[in-house]
Structure formats: structure tokens, C-alpha cells
Image (cartoon, rainbow, N blue to C red; front, top):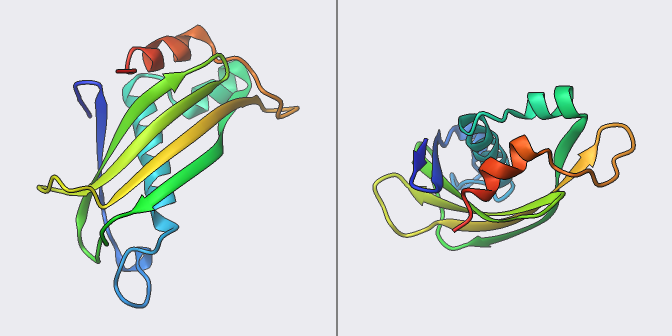
Length: 140
């Protein structure tokens, strides 16, 4: 769901998401972030399946930078807040912040650069206006 221009997605930490010490495994945050981005797009009315089926393109992660600030643990309910930083012709840049529900201090900060590519040749492909416009409207 959206809170202003930020999308909020909740995810529960399960045993499979943790390491031997009961702390969320570092790569798990990438999976949580992917789910949050997909739900953000779905809530904008632009699901990934439509982009592939109708336009023959999809998003790939070009770059991801994660800053681990504090650990999340088994059974925590996390909120992933997604913000659109910029939108280009064939790209988008997002910031995703992870919080424990009810807290204001971030656990993890992720900046991700996405590129849209063609399904066949996997070369850069322009985002259709139906996608670019709602994403650009979220840029602060």
C-alpha cells in the first residue's frame, strides 16, 4: 500500500530466512526487496507479467548497494518502504528501507538501479509510457 509517494510492504521473517544465529541472512533482504518492488508495481496497476506479455520487456537489477545497520531476527515483522528516486527511458533507480514494524530506525538501506531489457535480445528497451508515467509520478 502507498503512504504518500512511498510504498510499504510487510514481510514476516521465517526460520528459512535466517542464518545459524537466528539473524536474517544477508541475501534474504534481496528477496524481500524483490517482493516489495513487485507489489509496488502491482499496486500501481502495472504488474510484471503484463510488461512481459504485452511489451516483451522486463526489469533486471543493474546495481544493488546494501547497508546493513541493525539485524532483523526470526519472527520479526518487517516493513519494506520503496521510494522511486529517478526514472529514465529504460531505467529506474529506487531506495528500499527496511524497518521493524512500529520502529523508526532503519535496519537495512538498499539502493537499486533497474534496467528494462527486451525478452528476446536482452538489450536495453524503453519503458512504455504506461509504466514510465506512474513511476515518474512517485519521484520526490
